[in-house]
Length: 327
Length: 264
Image (cartoon, rainbow over all chains, first blue to last red; front, top):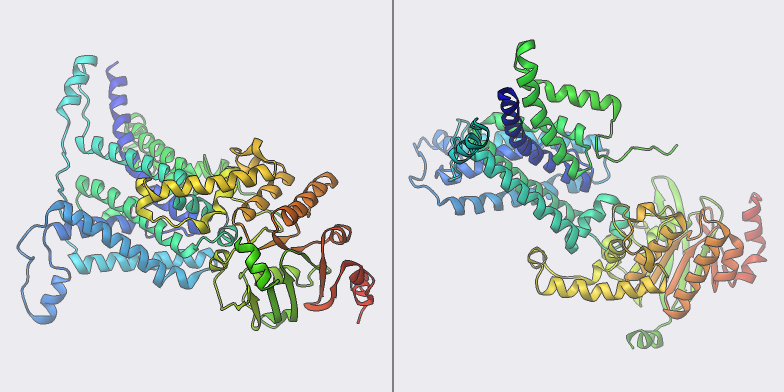
């Protein structure tokens, strides 16, 4: 009984991690559906959003290292903290600006190119953003705190203790993250199903030529999609950043999104969510049950092995469209 | 009312003057000129690879010709992007059905109203005021077209699961939803069985007669063309080889040669 409850607790924690995987995977899927671009930079966008948020909030002077080195000054921050809400708003604006710039400077010039070329362009974007973020806000590890409660939830522990005689350790941050992610997904779904622009987004995802023929501007849609991906990156960045500090490794979260995408299918939004949850729960449970027998640290590779198995037996993923090539 | 006034002013909807289109060294169209009159059904025919689809793609802006002019509604058309041309109320269908497969019939047809919907992103996010009014107004227009095409029963069906003939009809409906001044149909009968062809023929004639829509269509089936079209332009190897009433064209020696593959 005790083991079962412990496994349940592990699963719940995995579920919460899975939600964050799903969030990053969602960013990939949105862009891939609308423009056929596999956006390698999605992970770095998470890092960049978190960095910008921390930088603004803590009153770091942008490019202060660079300025100090060039001018021989010794600026160290503005000396004030920006109100969190304002910092959030400005970060969101900078993600929108980023989306606009990406369309202007990259996508516009690469329309109708081979997908591999667009993929390479996003790799370039990833490294640029990473370097630019470091240059702008400094490369040190930063602590992100925007007032989201962290730590083990006493309420949950007490409640579960009363019910099961075993207190679950659930992080309050994970609970908030789950709620926010759920709201985000619901919001995006409603927007895409019931608004004119949402309809245009779905149209572009289905057929570019037909979309053009009814008067939809692809470039406008791309800006919107990258903006949404920026928003998703910001939210993922807030929760991962709060959890583990804002640092380079944040962008590696995106690598966990890859097996999620293999599992869920590159073109399916429900797939990204279900895939994220399965990987999150799966890797925690696997580590808990089998990990100790084979030396532990299975979380590093479990997701990729699952993805590999899926590639062999169901290459389009759980929810992806079956690829039928007309010969 | 507006329609009638325009008709009095000018009965040429589109004038294509001396259009040449090249892909690298290959000439897809070479000095092609013809016009489309208001209210007519204008057919563009020719053997495979003659350049018919290229012509349609020039008209709706997918291709930009290297030479020549296109006059639309009495004005010379500047170089425009395809989605801007949609705003001039030129709508089209595609040879291989290009519907939005994941969406319902209704949603597909609502995209045809995109050019009339101007509410901003924020208004849509709030689903309030202008955005809501706009949806309702445009929905009414779409419902009329749904009735017209007799597809009420499948309004909420995802188009991907519909049979081929019905998909083609929905695609026609999406184009009609834009209340086009010029409707382009790229092989509307391709791949259909006889019954479906007859249905489609009837709808094209109804659209033309009852809605007064000007239509330019590409078609392979000569019998169908002769029944439908008011005037026919024949293209072969990217050049116009004949232009006139169906009967004239049918008996034109150049046309007969082109279809039988006589070398020039």
